[in-house]
Image (cartoon, rainbow, N blue to C red; front, side, top):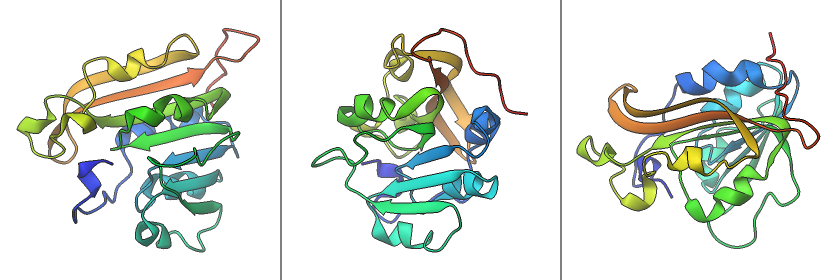
Length: 191
């Protein structure tokens, strides 16, 4: 679990600039997974643009804010214990921000459909000098996110280092497209 949103920390209200930047890569009308969605800032962003969104979090309280939202299916699931709750599901985009649980990363990446986008941004080592999270379990090692993608993904953008969001933090972020099984070509960006 990410310390960022535990122990009474507020959920960020504004969508991540990283997520907004790469939203046009997702096929129009596609199915999006907002993983560890919190109060659903990214689920709302995608739904407002006509995407179908599965918003998954373990906090029923946070998910309650999404009840009745058009094009959003909130799901209360334990993302760290028990059977993988998304077995067999594929998404045109998987969005993850401010969350890291390494034991489920391989299963999460498998949810990205061929030609689909992974848009991921979370904290990395060095963030402890700015505050929480500071536990190494919740901080990526340098290049770790990029290295986890292997050859199944074509990386479109990768960044790591200090950012202002609105306060300083050390993050790692990637946007990658899952290679189609029969080709190494990338899909065209949506306009």
